[in-house]
Image 1 (cartoon, rainbow, N blue to C red):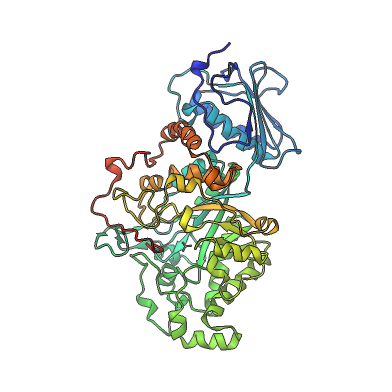
Image 2 (image 1 turned 180 degrees about the horizontal axis):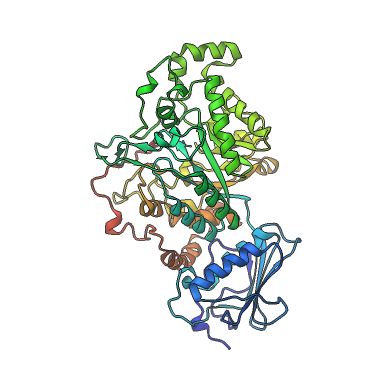
Length: 552
Ligand code: ACM
């Protein structure tokens, strides 16, 4: 039976490696999934089976009872070790049904994401619109595998707390875009968001600030309401498990030695007590980089070892992010304790102290089978041996690290900082940072041409970063992150040509289908024509972009 008029527009995002039909006008038959369709899952694919029953069950009331892969009208999940671990093949044939074959469990799960997109936007709903209507997809074969193993989004849950439900929702959104790393920025000057049993003041005091600046850091406006919140250890165990079922690794970030004012407000002995009265410090209420940083003392080292012991017990991720960015050294320069430490260690001034902090925890993590990753400032004063670098101030840090044999995650602020404005016009809700349009993100290339083939292999992948100074809730977050995360996902997954040769028209054509999916998911993305009236924020100050490097 050919009923192409009922086949939804099926532009896939991210684009697969190969597809033998574009899903439209090919004269192919439609493969239907209905009440009789069985689900056959080989061992190792149970998570995807559970996900399919939950998702398609909710969207179309499909029961998907267990069945045999050999019977007709079956959705079969299979493994083929000849495929790459995250690679998959999707075969849809009206005679027998749909087969999703992965190189490993992750491949099967990504195949299921593709299947959901092929079933049309209603597959993204949580209850059926038209009970009894069987979804379908055109007969076809897709072969696919990701370009990069690290395809991430960083969520800054410190500047504005995102309640647990919001994090779980973002894990669903990451999965729908075949992204596999959620980097959680859990601590900063403006808030500490992870329960540490040994140090209850970190959340009793450090998770709350009295008020919040609205807009750019020079803005005269304040939200006078206290802001805060934190994840309990059970919340985080749930988040990690929910992510794992979706083939996503949660990389925790505990920022040291800078961006630590919330921790010092909770435990004043962590700060440079010989320079300032740290007992009067509060959780910071404004934006920028606080001068209040950890003291280079054994007290601070032991404290963070204890913190990290609890972090490691919660997060199985091999990489643990320890920040290392934007650590002003003024207090160390003024501190007799810090100067004595520099002399005792024989390190090269205050930069040497920063690198001493990071080297200590690099070894500490390595002894526990983990690896340190940090922002590219950790290169200053010498990079710890096994450390990997998140290259954020452009490509330079990543290039230097890759040339020195270190692993790199490319996330340059000039390209993939999603807090930055997505249009040059005056209408963006809080215009900060560089102008990065959807097309700019689509033309982002994670591997710079300066790297040889061997050095390029050090680029584990890429991530987009969503800093939340100007995103005070889910709608603002959605607006900044989408639709640009869809373009980013294609950069991270698909094998695109060089930036100038990328077919942006084809991407925007497929985005038409994708906006319908985002609508069904309830994502408050920035519409192609600019912000809707309620998305604008007249009166809240941004900062005109004058071409100089921005700083919120
Ligand atoms: C950063 O944006 N400070 C990593």
